[in-house]
Image 1 (cartoon, rainbow, N blue to C red):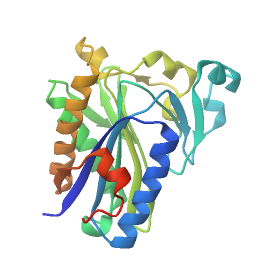
Image 2: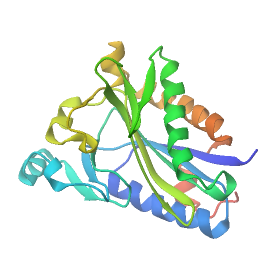
Image 3: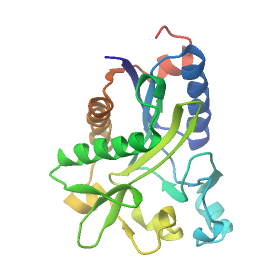
Image 4: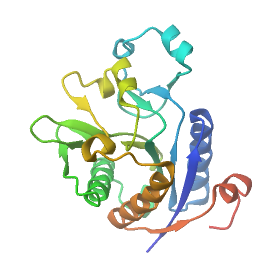
Length: 235
């Protein structure tokens, strides 16, 4: 079983996480290794995917500036989404040559891992075709995890955002993922429990295990310091 390096990043500025992703994507391709899984949180930020409409940003950018919310255009697929504290953001940087060269199946596998993770908390989550992502509450579906990736020469980057104890009112500034008639929720909203930073960091370990199990990788954790300071560590 191939090894997948897993890093818990803590709260990291989006711009740094983006540059780190690009660096690791290049490393994975250059050295032909299986890949990395980065799990972290970000300060409040909106990102626009390649298919995004600026009309789906519902407030003036001056409002974002006043509130300290940054806006980025990025390479992933999909529309506009929000990242912020209380949300686990995952960046699976996977060499599909070590898995399957099937991007559609990879997206479905990310969904399956998140569904399994939420089952740990007795939450029934599901897919809602034709949309990508993970949903709860079948009667009135609400998205709990957004997914949007990019793939370059069969190496994936970008990933998913899973709402744990996320500040949901920030989603009112956008049309999340460009879907007009569906809501957004969080694990806290579903269970009625606020998840502390310590709990969310432990959750990252469980989520990494579920991703490794679904994708068929042996997950091995390394520290953020090792990753950042020793980019050339032996893999």
